[in-house]
Amino acid sequence: MGIEGTQGDDRPVWARRMRAERQARGWSQTDAVRALEGHADKSTPSTSSLLRNWKRWEGGEAEPDDFYKPLIAKAFGTVSAAFFPRPGNRSGDIELLSGTGMDTLELVSRLRTSDVSPATLEALRITADRLCSEYPYMDPQQLAIEGHAWLRRICSLLDRRLTLLQHQEVLSLAGTVSLLIGCVEYDMGQRHKARSTRRAALSLGEEAGDADVMGWAHEMAAWFAITQGDYRGVIAAANAGEFVAGRRSVTAQLAAQKAKAWARIGDRREMEKSLDQGREVLETLPYPEDLDHHFVVDPSKFDFYAMDCYRLFGDNDRARVYAAEVIRSSTDLDGTPRKPMRIAEAKITLGVVSAREGDVEQAVALGRSAISGERKSLPSLLMVSGELRNILTEKYPSEPQAAGFLEELQGLTL
Image (cartoon, rainbow, N blue to C red; front, side, top):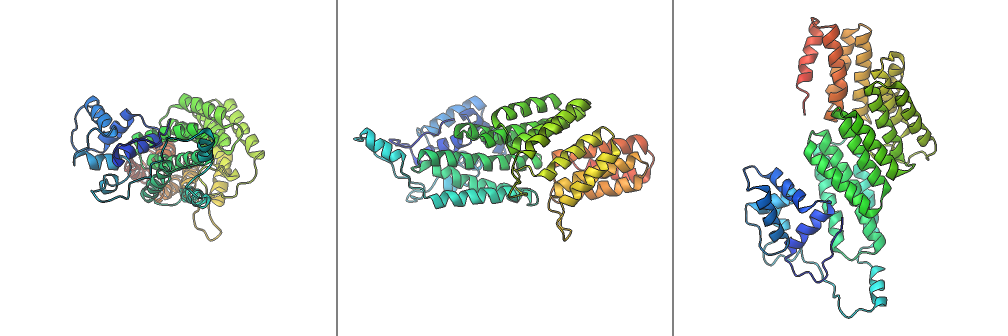
């Protein structure tokens, strides 16, 4: 994916921004048109017709009318007044650099200079890390809003004069925030948006040469696949991620996703091989500084994956031990849940074990507690709660408590 510069570009500011915003997301013009169509609340012309219009708009040959301006702005996560400033508003103007009369030495000098300070980039790095650390507990809609706002700020730097290293850094930061937005979108059941955002993040990671961003983009594909029952797709995505990531934190999570897929396929040997692979990687890595950062695999997270695997194989004792440890490590000393989504799945696991052992009252109580939390990842929670639903349906078809809980589960939909 290439981010084109503005040198010698006499197109209107909004046309340049359309291209810059699109390229920052790794979208083709067709991708951009589909995003626009997704935000329209009434029928639009055919995709091919809109694509022709988009080419004219982006080329500066024609200005979008009042119907399309809000749609374009919404597709890029902003408002039309900011994207299409009124006459006299120079907030979107950027200084064009003269590209004539420079010899080789001056060109190289410009590549080594920047009008973006190191402090600005450091502030953006801190903010990106903060957003990623708020993922476990912040309201997903609010986190998505903040994520989009900061992604716009980061992408706006691509129109500034950057050194080569700064350009790479900005692309990496944009990739990281895009990954976070994609995760939140998927949590809220916005599958189409999440898939597009994931692809954009992968393109940004490839352009920046950032193995972490690329690895996590593949991990997201594995996560999407497992919650949709595509277990071979999980393994393929995890293998692709391992290839680009090497021995990083994300590699341990990729191995864990493979283990979860093998468990659902029913191959215990491959499941345990994958778990061992992930553990071995984690053992070689330093202890993470920020345990809340979503794109860091803390050691206790591997108990969470092992819990899932052994529950699926009916190993009640090991599943119970892992679930109790997940709840303990995910709760602060004052009893405040620090990882509410992990705790929810651990409670479902304990509910499954209780149902298998004949304690339907305990199973239902744990299930209700799990689905009542405010912060939840719907695709993951639906996947694991489906196991509890199946056991209650098969073993306790006439039990009133089970029937009441099953009705509640029906309301837990994407």
